[in-house]
Each structure stands twice: as structure tokens, then as C-alpha cells.
Length: 95
Image: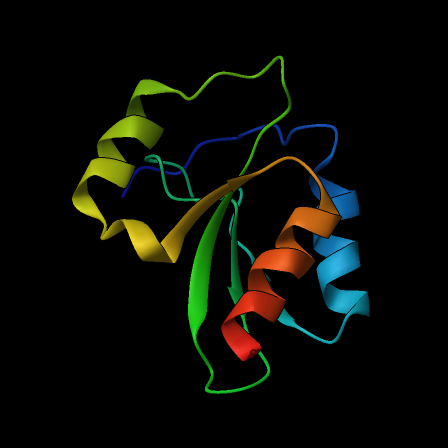
């Protein structure tokens, strides 16, 4: 895997911090490169991990990100723009 000095989107910290404050385990993987998602977040019940790609309305998917998502089963991969979206998704797993 090639490592890149990848910059994160402006909403990255807010999303990560919101998920952590809600009690979720968050692995910040934004700097892994090769299209790997920005975060791996584990829910509180059942320990299901989801992959999250952080985007803003102004940041399109990169070719490596598209290639990665096409190799992954869709239910475990989410594109989010806010911390509240993460909370809603994770709480949906716990209902």
C-alpha cells in the first residue's frame, strides 16, 4: 500500500470528534491512501464496523476512492458530510 501525505476535508475533525463524543470507537484512517476510507467506526452494540468517507459538497470522489468502494460490499461503506450523519447511521445499527 502506498502511503500519501493526504490532506483531510475541513469537516473531518468535526465528524471524528462527534462520533467519539457519542461513545463510538473511531479509527482515523485518513492518511492510509490508496482510496481507503477516512474512518472506521465501530458501533456500541454488536461491534459492527463501518467505513466512512468524509466529503464536503465541494470535494468529489477521487479515482482511488471510487475503485476502493467498488471492491467493498456497499452496506459497510458510507459517504458522510456531518457528524450527525454518522450518529444517525450508527444509531440505526443499534435499533
